[in-house]
Image 1 (cartoon, one colour):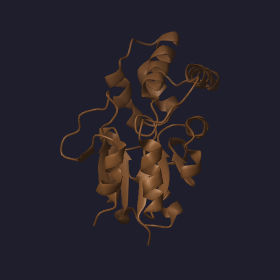
Image 2: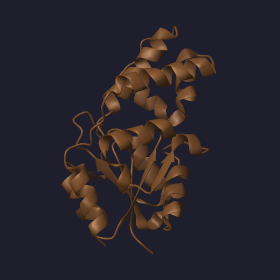
Image 3: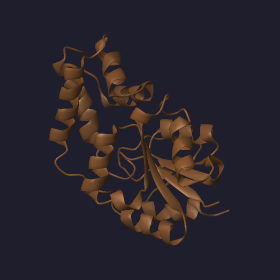
Image 4: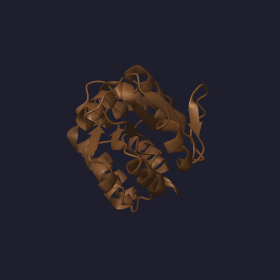
Length: 209
């Protein structure tokens, strides 16, 4: 059974987190909700999809039109998407060493596919699981287990690389190896986990043993 390495997307592979957080803050404000900051928005992501997160801040359900407006606003903000420095080289090393790769992200499929395509990373990932396709969001293990199953391996033989506490909790819940992607200057401090300060460190952390 092959070794699998699954990645979070935003803030781990691609530098889009400021745009996404800003998009949520702008939507909540425009729809009559309160001013919300980065920490509040990141803390709400495990609640569910964009509709659930927005409803949490607004105190009411959002309409399909409002949700479409939010997604359009994010797309307008994301004029370009770039991988973090060192990420393509890391992925090349992992593939050369025989690992199979996937992405599990809480983002929408349309948004995730767009980010992977614009950043040039799409060819690395035959498997993409998004927050729209799982019953429970991170830190629950559903999406990570689904990604591993699609790769033909077990979560116990996988590593999950992510930048947030929810990502690392998801890995632990699935029985996978959690690796903290700490190369983004805005990455949260999550003590008690293996930490990679640069993408080049990841292959040695996830393929050993």
